[in-house]
Length: 108
Image (tube, rainbow, N blue to C red):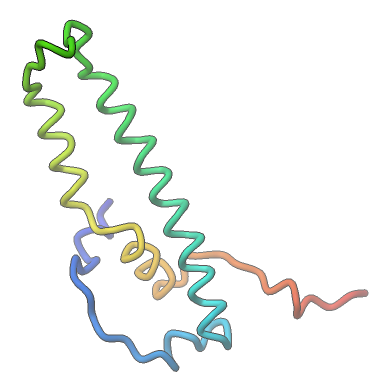
């Protein structure tokens, strides 16, 4: 989570040529980033559900909804995190994403 502070929370302009250089193709880069962003989003969703499960109030009914301040605090904390796409881009730029190009694998 220490890298989250380095990740910008807004959109920044990027040079597409430099962005596509590691894969040689901007579309392959986008696919890699999309898949990694989905992995990050699923992990965050699982983590959020685990946190919310620990503070779940079993007494709540449809008629009686009580504000649970712990749930609100946890939700706000997750909302302040950088979006999964921005995290995936940061990992890609730092060469922290492993990927293989199956089209260029030599058959021996």
